[in-house]
Length: 317
Ligand code: SF4
Image 1 (cartoon, rainbow, N blue to C red):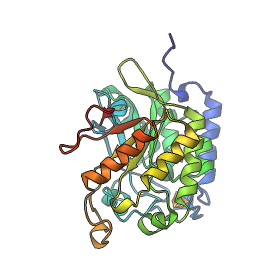
Image 2 (image 1 turned 60 degrees about the vertical axis):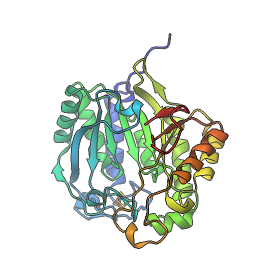
Image 3 (image 1 turned 180 degrees about the vertical axis):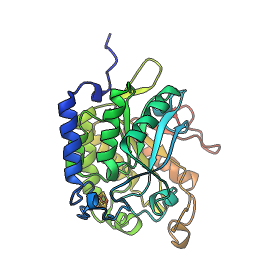
């Protein structure tokens, strides 16, 4: 019988961990933490395109029960929402946090204390939502929390628009990668998220993540302990390029990497003013994406819909 993997950050030496934290701070000096590489002098207080400067800003630290079953488990995911974001999605559902940077200032030790409290409340994991632009502080917080007894897996929950150099520092700190694959056409990535290089950057990042953590491993209670789980939000009018994205996952990563297929798109933030994305998706648009996953023999988590008879196909969110 295989033993349950220990969280990676418990397996590295303090000196290796500290070298990673130092490297992350260095990467933020003329900031290159994300693919924007905007060069903001973050440690001197300059604000980058993501809205972050020299202080860690967090919108909320809470247990969350609405993630995929292996992430939320029965006791909830210990979710930390970070203020600001390097993507500029017109339809962002969290735009007060991502675009208007709503949140409060923390330091690394306060965040470490928040992680410990989440663990005490029974969290299955620490779920870092859009944390790339704060990763030096966050890695420091994980280190401090580890010293105080943190022992649950770390989830890196991301738009999938990630810088390779940053990911290299995250190796052996992150246990579960939960990235998006948002687009398969850079024209849409530019128009709707302001990221003209999203597709290439995203696909490379997925490969790096997979190389670090491999396929999703769950324990006997169905909780994820390690691995990659990719999210795909179906957008109206085929904008998310679902079939092409699935084809890439199958070809580059194999058919055992689960895809969480999300149907909850609604026209938030500036989407109401765009005639292509100013509506929810139809059942047919979602079902078409479901069928593609099945046709390609990939693994999926699908969302329940009253109008769709997909309950018996795979795991449901
Ligand atoms: S993380 Fe922010 S400050 Fe750093 S490169 Fe990206 S947009 Fe610029």
